[in-house]
Length: 171
Image 1 (cartoon, rainbow, N blue to C red):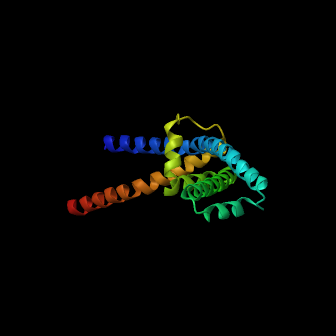
Image 2: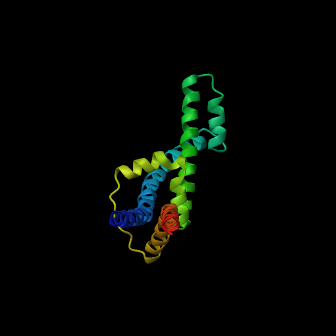
Image 3: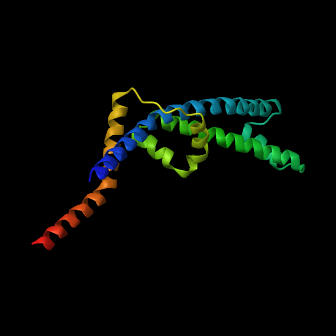
């Protein structure tokens, strides 16, 4: 019985510490994305400069012309430029979403499989810490308590059934 209570408290503490990390990971992720957006913005600016220099109306029309070129190297370069532009756009959208989202939306964002690779890169440099904002601590506490109840509810129901079953057998 004591062991179960100890495990119970350890599980809750671990959930709370884990949930407190969401806003800290979000801050690290946003910093990472800022660097990525800055780097890719320089590339996109260069593509726009090339389009302007060579008389294209925009980057997409330049890339369309390059993709129609007979030289495979030129087509591959155009595909690479298109990939960089798409990654830049997605990173900008992610930044916007993370900056305007609440705790639960941020946690859901990180739970998406599409984010695992970049999240893994961010977590390689991550150092656990505690958030200082009261609303963040409150959200983490509510989330931890909710998950704790979801995890331990089946255990409590099973223990209650066993206890009830024993009482029936003893009478």
